[in-house]
Length: 414
Image (cartoon, rainbow, N blue to C red; front, side, top):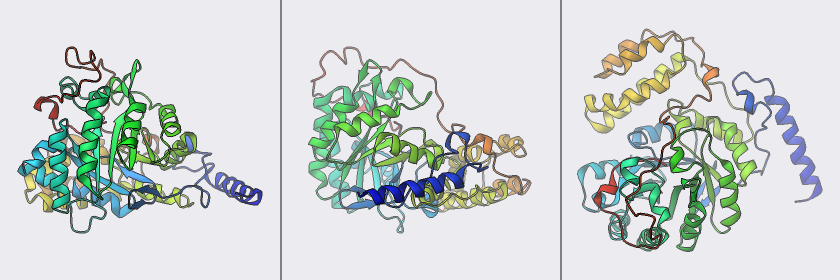
């Protein structure tokens, strides 16, 4: 880069800073964060996939089904990953797993998260996905911190067994052929047992096309703040494939701050988009050098809720099941709206679309988005924990034996 280029970039960022200061729909933390300068960030190359903006929707169980992915995609481009599918059940063509792994015809690229604890089952599942041309990208989950998973040697516990981790990753990559494989993991078990650098090196050596780090330990669960220093360190260690950062992307400018602070190649967005699928519009704007738009009013959100619910009913072809699935989204959509909070007890009991329509007809459509809640966590908000591990699990880190079926609980997280 020439000196003149440096000057142009500095002037662009100064102008952007001047525009954003005093904005009423950006938190105080991000008031002076400028939008991206021309050429500041690049698309993320994940094998043959070029992802722009460099944003990935995190897989979340019971949430990132096809209707939610399509709704988010409508607001902005990026990579939208499916709910987690268990490898053994997928290899056995279990009906529920097959449904989870389905994509709408207009979803491109098709990105699926796979979870497995046994290299044999993982290899078989990947063969199914590839032979049936179901996916364009496979992500693997090694970050779930749930006690019943780690307590049986699965999820976030697996990176503490590097030989086992390597064999699982190798089975996926070797059977994937031209389909890119990525892995997602946490910083470690706890502050005394960090595993993320080892996991990143194994992924790079075994042919993964990118890695994603949730910058919390399993002991943290979703408590407190993510430690972005972990992302910085991983980016310094991993040189040949992209490193994606995950943790505390509540606003679009958080993504810019993370990438500037850590040098990572892209971001993974999880809880920040719950009840706020338009976050992907904001992300597309700031990465393209544009100021983000004002968030929608309660009336527009009510319309969005109805659209989301109708998509779920159509997808599952079961109105009762779809509406029960949608209940948790209701609380996220109306969170912080003072004139709608009294509706939550009704919303979490809806049984049909008519129930939802009748309730939403009563909202004050002009109520503005509650900006004081921009950074209020949604979804999982658990306190710290002592991570459950099988007895003697850490005695031999090089033990290659996979855990049993009990470690395959279908709980996506990380």
